[in-house]
Structures are given as C-alpha cells and as structure tokens.
Amino acid sequence: MPPLLASSALMAGAPAVVLLSLMALGELAPGPGLLALAICIGFAAWLAWFWVAAVSRLGAALRRAAEEEGPFSAPMPIPHLPAIGEIEEGLERLTRSLRARAALVTRLRASDEVVVEALPAPLLLLAADTTMLRANRAARSLFGLQDGSGRGDLGAFKRHPLMAAALDQALASGAPQTVEISLPGTVARELTAQVLALDPPLADGGKLLVVLTDRTAARALDRMRVDFVTNASHELRTPLASLMGFIETLRGTARDDPEAQQRFLGIMAEQSERMRRLIDDLLGLSRVEMSEHQPPEGSVDLAAVLRAEAAAMEPLLAARKVRLTLGIPEAALTAAPADADQLAQVARNLLDNALRHANAEVRLDAMAARQGGRDGVAFAVRDDGPGIAREHIPRLTERFYRVDKARGRGAGNTGLGLAIVKHIVARHRGQLNIESEPGSGATFRVWLPGPAQKS
Picture 1 (cartoon, rainbow, N blue to C red):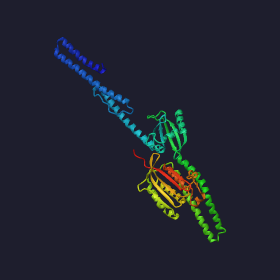
Picture 2: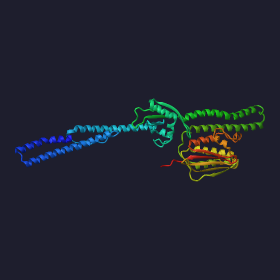
Picture 3: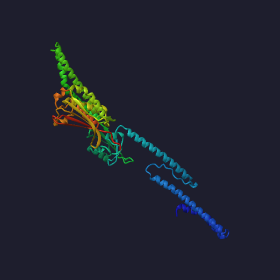
Picture 4: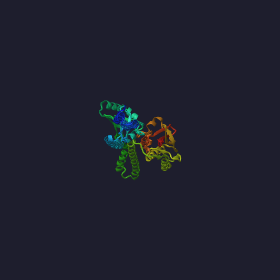
C-alpha cells in the first residue's frame, strides 16, 4: 500500500473503531452506523487520492527540472495543503530563484557571444577531434565560411602539417602552441596561429581555442619595400643617367647652341615623363598588392565600365589610327564583389597594351560566363598585332617583363601594366587567361565572379 494511502487509512481508522464499538454495544443502530462508517471510509479514500495526485504532480515537475540541461524556470504545481505550507513557500522561492538565474545565464551568454563576434582577431573553437564548433565574424571572413559551420577552406587550414602538429601538441601537453603557416591559394595568406587547450572543456565540447593573426598585409608590405627599391633603382637608372648626361651637355658644349638645346630638352622631357609613369605604376602596384588579400565589396556593372573606358581611349586610338570594335551587350553584366575603379584600371591597361601592339584593330567583347561551376561575367581584349611566342606567355604578368624590351620602352611601356592586372584580378577572385600565336595577335580574357545565388 502506498505510504500516503496507508496514512489516510490510519487517519480514518480511529472513527471507524469507535463506530463499530457503539454498534456492538447496541447504542447505535446498524443502519445509521454502517452509513457513517461508509462515509468515513470514503472521505479517507478521497483524501488519500488528493494527496497522492498532488504530490505526484510535484514529483514529476521536480524530475523534469533535474533532467533538463539548462536552468529550470517553469512554474511548479504546488499542492495547496495546509500541512505542507512551508514546502509550498520554499518551492515558490526556488522557482523564482531558478527563473532569475536562467535570465542571468541567458544575458551572460548573449554578452559573451557579442564580444567574441565583435573581436577583430579571427577566433575558432574546435572539439577534441578538431571539428569546428564556432567561428566569429573575422574568422568567417578570413576563411570564406558561409556561417558558423565548417564550410569553406578551413579544411586546408587544419590539414596544414604545422597546424595539425600544433593542435596535436596542445591536446597532448595542454600547453599553448604558436605556429606560423602559409596557406596557398588564389591569394597566398601568411597566418600566425595560437592554439590554447581548454581544461575543462566548454559546455558545448569546445576543447581547443585557435586565435589567428593575419600577417599577409605586413609580409606583403615588407616584400614590396624590397621590390620597390630593387626595381625602381634598376628601371630609373637609365633615364636618370640620360638626364644627367644631357644636363652636362647643356652646361658645356651646347651652352650656346639653341637648336641642340631644344632637341635635348625634348628628350629630357620624354625621359622625365617615363620616370613619372614608372613611379605612378610602381605606387599603383604597391596599393593593389597591399589590398590583394582582402576581397572587394559591392557590385559593379562591368558593361558600363567597359563602355566608359572605350570612350576614354578614342583620342589615343585616333592618334594611332587603330579601330576599336565593341561587342558589349546593352544589358547589365554584374560582377560581385567588385571594385569599379580597379576594374576600370584592368580594362584601361589591357586596352592600352593592345593599342601598343595592334596594326589596325582592337576588339573588346563582354559577356556572361560560367566557370568552375559558378556564374560570372567575362570580357576579352583582342589585337591584330604580331602575336606572342608561347614561351613568353607565362611570364607576361611579371614585373618589368617585356617580350621586346627596346620596343616596349619606346612605346612608353613601364612593364607593370599586366602585373597590376594580374593582382587586381586575383583580388576579385577571378582569372586571367592569355592566348596568342606568333602572327595571329593576342587575346587577354578576364573572368570575374557574379553575385552569389540565393538559395
């Protein structure tokens, strides 16, 4: 028999014994006595059922509270019985306390997530098996993750030999690990990673915290400083030597020769303009390389950009007596993410390069194009010039590389235009293809990604 039911039976037992005794002595008639006895037993059963049902509901609520992972905040069913009034008050206080603690925990978790999400340093939280659990906004941007999951190029990062060794060592020893790695790709990234083992692990199983520092821009800046000094000193030596020689001549033998002075001053002006173009291109290339690891933002109508650059080239085309044929659709061709100024520079450099080598015609075409399973846009610049031998094509985008060095310098070519094009296209996560055969002209084709399709 359940304890509460037994207690209720005992409570009703004393009146029942009294009634039976009175009936045995003849002081109470059997009919009324039996009715009174039945009423007493029924009341005891109802009281037992009331206690059992109420306390059972309370026990079920307590079991649910114990089984829940988070703080229990739901109201508990309280048996309204005078005998357990103190229990009722205690449970009410417990319920209010649990609600307050649940609200406090929720606020603290939200505050922590806001702080971690806003940190400029990329943060990754990994499980003991290196499965990624969380990534903040900076980390998602760094690895191209669509959300907090592991989609993106994070797999290559974790599989890097140095990174994998640092993760294993942190798990084995519990000591922080620091490693510098280089991730290959369209744009190589230089990263410093600090791996911290969490003991005990976080509630969601987080065991490893990876704090990243992107050193790509700093390393690129260091390389650019060295390259700038080396390249500038090499390329500027010839025009500077020419200027110094003409200055000495004007001070000496040509001091009183007006005709020679005019000729020499004209050459000096050409050499000065050549140095200006060279310095402008070097500075432009440096700016592009500094931002190459950061993809652009926004979208650009490529067709409008190409039409504007073609119109700006008309005076130069007329001076060289070269015809420009356009194959640009009227509809918009959207590139995204994209930088309008940089795409205009790509078009300008390719048109200028084609103009220098064309015999009679340059053709500019643009179209929608799909590449690598992704929709995008493309444009191609073709010339009818002498063409390029196959062995030169892989090196055309190198700094200061010229197929015909003498002709390139004479045409005002600094040797940096195609290098700038390569780095801008890489920043846009696009592709540059060069096709040419000797005697058949050259085609420079650029593909750029379009807007991401919404699922």
